[in-house]
Length: 557
Ligand SMILES: [Zn+2]
Image (tube, rainbow, N blue to C red; front, side):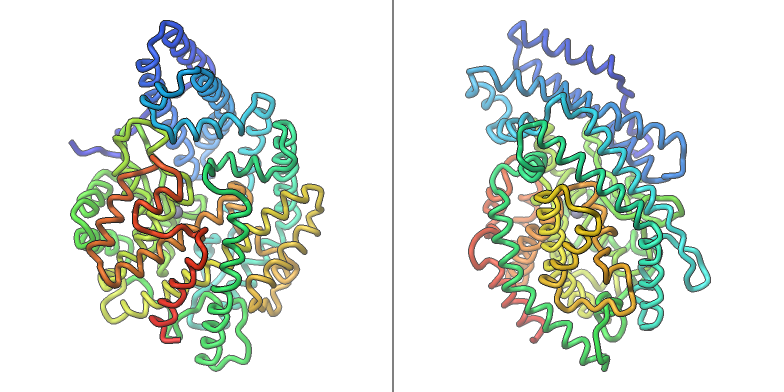
């Protein structure tokens, strides 16, 4: 039976229906039916997640739709209530002295995750959590409101993408001037939102007994097998091994193009012949991707066709659509959904290769017995998405044309390397922010600028006043809405590049390990999943050295 997106539905819960459901679960536990209660609870959580995902998706599809906004506000207000009931049940189950029996039913990893969930929540922070979502929505709506006149049209921030990568240097410059003029004009509001978020999060941490937000942030992300010290060592690895390589790449580009200086607006212009773009429009790419995924792996091909046939993708850019791209899921039916904003550049291809990796993993894991295993923690989830970007390299001719395929691969690899210093900078910044919750907005801008000079010493903003003063971080959604979730991309990139190195020698073996990793979903913590796919943990000494060596050879540096 083919699932259609229009069939996806879940009953709208209220505080009362949730209270009744949890009362029934507790009664079942009182009666000694632990197995039955856990199964019923799993169904309830899948239903609730499906409804929440649908409500958020509708809002992101049209942030100007009042009904969608009201529904999202309702869901955001209900979320802390639902969390409270869920955590109370986890607490009750974990308090049972017979943990071995619980482990036999649900698995040891889920119990570890629940231990973290309990440590990250208390009813005392319910109102704070609601306020946190509200502030996150304010940020999304503010960025979605951007209307920028360029090239004779009006675009939003996503629509600015093609101009920012134009082969015409003056157009790239104009795009960045207009982008940062928007951020400068909204600077006070962006500062207000972030300042409120930092104070709110620090306050939550204090209420839960933590000295700062950092340990709470790590627990909220369910990082059961690594901590801030591991992450700090990884940042140092990137600084030592990758920053010099990216610096050399940018110097080579400057010389190749005959520029006296490489400006900020030149950083996105990777290929001197012009960044390879998709060989066709939306409909063309959707069609070509069928062949691409068929050639990758039969199960990937079949799954992609069911996404297309069922209408589980919304890829076109529209006014008032939220920016960015993501994959969400409806665990009652098992089908995921891909949301994106096509802009005619190579980023559109990333939607197929990156978001499809998430979607495929989620689909492969849909029948795992515990809802906690449907997605792994974020850094593991990004392995599925970022690795597929590399594993589709041999098929890239289908998306950009055979003549541009090698140039595309080169551009993508350079982009992947250049991303690492930026990614660890975003992470380092957040560690400093939450260690210094009393810092003023101006001090935060100075903090960012100092770290940017450490990790990206090449950055030359020229006449772009706002980022020159330290404002670039305000364009990064994750810094506002998903604290500490950014290093995840850099950890996953380290794993994805290992898949790339392996696929160059053994494409079928690498693909088979990838598919098996996807099916494992979130049944284990990060480093166990990494090891199970034959990869080396990013926290192991020297892991980046071999990847960097391979990249240097490939790029003929
Ligand atoms: Zn992703």
